[in-house]
Structure formats: structure tokens, C-alpha cells
Amino acid sequence: MHCKIHVESVERMMERNWPKGVKKTKQRVDIYTILANASKPLTASEIYEQLIEKSKDEKAPYAFSTVYRCLLTFENSGIVNKLVALTDQDAMYELRLEKHHHYAICLKCRERFPLRTCFLGDLKKMLPADMDGFEIVGHQLEIYGYCNKCCNTNEKKELS
Image (cartoon, rainbow, N blue to C red; front, side, top):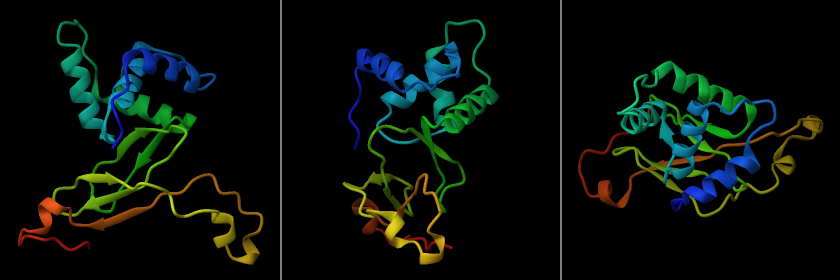
């Protein structure tokens, strides 16, 4: 699991990772901070709920569409990974930091467990010879199964 990042670290991390040409609006900074402090990938709905909770005393709360627009901007600028699992209806988002993550996903409770390492290695070597010019810009690996908590129940659900 990720550990919580201290507020001071979030500001320094934001300065280091903020993409050139992307304006730092209050909404984007707030969403970035939520993602930086998250212990797991979050859906747009979860981010929105945290924004509403944070802005209870403000006159103009956030619109849900603002969250999606900010996440799309972050995704297009390369500072956020959008994770879409076969088992989930909603995409999840996490900050793209120096080290990327792959997940084992429980088919029953939908919990994501980060894998300790990326074992895919040099992906260029896995490509067929006729794809020599293929430029790899990323990859995603998900393993599906049942966590320890759900493994003992009789209500297992097959991946369709």
C-alpha cells in the first residue's frame, strides 16, 4: 500500500510533477492533493465526495463535471494513470509517480492490492520481430482472484 504523504511533501511533489502549460486552478490543486493523499486509486465519484466534504463551508461547491474535466486534463498531460478493470464499471485514477503499480483485484469485494514489483521487464523484447519500430509508452497488468477475506465465502463470482 502507499503511505500517506505529508502536506508539505504534496506541495513539493506538485511543483516537481506539474505539467508545463497546465494552469494551476484551485480545483486542479485540490484534486491533485486528494490523489496524492490517497492510499489507493480512486473513482471520480470518490474524489467528488471528498471535494464536497472539504468544501462544505464554501458557497460554490464543485460540479461533478469539473472533476471529470480535471482528471481528463491530468490524464492527457501524463500525471495521472486511468485504471479500467474488467470487473469495474467506473475508472479509477492514481497519480503517475516515479514507480508505477500493477494490481491484484478481488472479484467479490473489488479491493485492489498493489503488486510488489513489475515483472514485465523489457517489453520491447516481447514484441514480434516485425514490430521493431513500435514505441511503447506504457502498460497495465491486472490479476483477478479472491482476497483472503472473500476466499472463505461461498459467493464467488466468475469473471465474464
